[in-house]
Amino acid sequence: LAMRIIEAGKRSGALLSKGPQGVAVASLYVASILMDIRRTQSAMSRDTEVSEVTIRNRYKDIVDGVLIEVSL
Image (cartoon, rainbow, N blue to C red; front, side):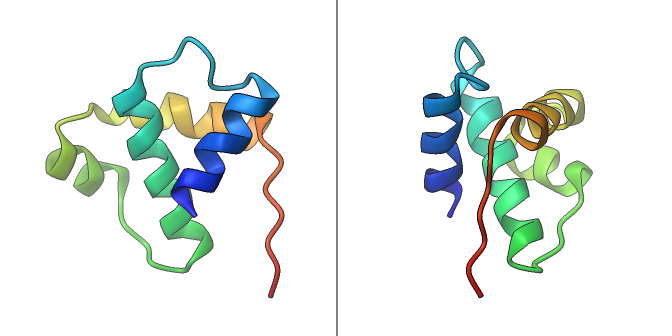
Protein backbone atom coordinates (compact mmCIF):
# COMPACT_ATOMS: atom_id res chain seq x y z
CA LEU A 1 0.00 0.00 0.00
CA ALA A 2 2.82 2.39 0.83
CA MET A 3 4.39 1.75 -2.58
CA ARG A 4 1.08 2.53 -4.28
CA ILE A 5 0.86 5.78 -2.32
CA ILE A 6 4.37 6.72 -3.44
CA GLU A 7 3.57 5.88 -7.07
CA ALA A 8 0.36 7.95 -6.93
CA GLY A 9 2.32 10.82 -5.38
CA LYS A 10 4.86 10.72 -8.18
CA ARG A 11 2.12 10.68 -10.83
CA SER A 12 0.31 13.63 -9.22
CA GLY A 13 3.52 15.58 -8.73
CA ALA A 14 2.79 16.07 -5.02
CA LEU A 15 5.95 14.25 -3.94
CA LEU A 16 8.39 15.44 -6.59
CA SER A 17 11.59 16.99 -5.23
CA LYS A 18 10.91 15.62 -1.74
CA GLY A 19 13.49 13.54 0.10
CA PRO A 20 13.06 9.82 -0.47
CA GLN A 21 13.37 8.83 3.19
CA GLY A 22 10.70 11.27 4.33
CA VAL A 23 8.37 10.22 1.52
CA ALA A 24 8.88 6.54 2.34
CA VAL A 25 8.21 6.95 6.06
CA ALA A 26 5.21 9.22 5.54
CA SER A 27 3.78 6.72 3.04
CA LEU A 28 4.18 3.96 5.61
CA TYR A 29 2.49 6.21 8.17
CA VAL A 30 -0.48 6.89 5.85
CA ALA A 31 -0.71 3.19 4.95
CA SER A 32 -0.76 2.26 8.62
CA ILE A 33 -3.62 4.70 9.24
CA LEU A 34 -5.60 3.34 6.28
CA MET A 35 -5.06 -0.23 7.49
CA ASP A 36 -6.06 0.71 11.06
CA ILE A 37 -2.60 -0.08 12.41
CA ARG A 38 -2.12 3.11 14.38
CA ARG A 39 1.45 4.24 15.07
CA THR A 40 2.41 7.69 16.23
CA GLN A 41 4.62 9.98 14.22
CA SER A 42 6.94 9.97 17.21
CA ALA A 43 7.28 6.16 17.12
CA MET A 44 7.83 6.22 13.35
CA SER A 45 10.49 8.89 13.82
CA ARG A 46 12.31 6.91 16.50
CA ASP A 47 12.26 3.73 14.42
CA THR A 48 13.40 5.35 11.17
CA GLU A 49 15.50 8.35 12.26
CA VAL A 50 13.36 10.67 10.12
CA SER A 51 12.21 13.72 12.08
CA GLU A 52 8.60 14.09 13.19
CA VAL A 53 8.46 17.41 11.35
CA THR A 54 9.49 15.73 8.09
CA ILE A 55 6.93 12.97 8.56
CA ARG A 56 4.23 15.55 9.31
CA ASN A 57 5.12 17.67 6.28
CA ARG A 58 5.21 14.71 3.87
CA TYR A 59 1.97 13.43 5.42
CA LYS A 60 0.34 16.77 4.57
CA ASP A 61 1.74 16.57 1.03
CA ILE A 62 0.23 13.11 0.61
CA VAL A 63 -3.14 13.98 2.13
CA ASP A 64 -3.46 17.23 0.17
CA GLY A 65 -2.01 16.11 -3.15
CA VAL A 66 -2.60 12.41 -3.65
CA LEU A 67 -5.93 10.77 -4.40
CA ILE A 68 -6.16 7.56 -2.42
CA GLU A 69 -9.01 5.21 -3.28
CA VAL A 70 -9.73 2.49 -0.77
CA SER A 71 -11.68 -0.61 -1.85
CA LEU A 72 -13.37 -2.55 0.89
